[in-house]
Image 1: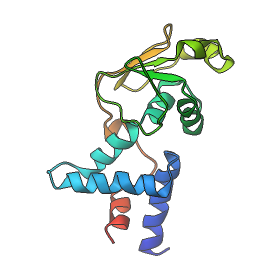
Image 2: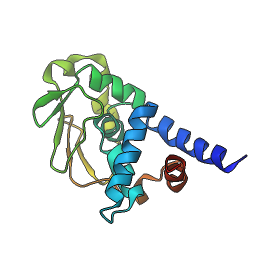
Image 3: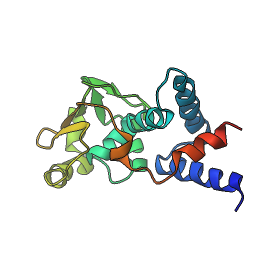
Image 4: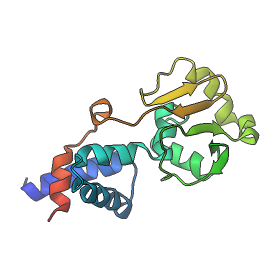
Length: 162
């Protein structure tokens, strides 16, 4: 396989892992590359941006079995951020944000089954989960070493720097 083909394959792996469209993914890459000029590691910035999305946080908290399902739940208005209903999957979470389930949605079957499955679930270190109340708090920021993405991020930046 050519170098271009390898870089393209790495890009597709990460893009599909986060369930993003091409334009959305490209915007995250470009944002990371722009901030690179401020002497920050673009790989860390990219992962921080992708992991801080609301739909990804819902998946990481165990509220959904897949990122696609998490995106759907967010789009259907199942979650509150700081007591405000948010239905934008790409909403960027910040340290201190509180995530909760909309009270009217707790009667739905999909939410009813969560309390039992979340008791045994351990979320990442940057998220603090209260399984009984179905709430969570962002207590830090995601770290590249903790995430272990399925793709080589440097190859993705090389792909987009053409």
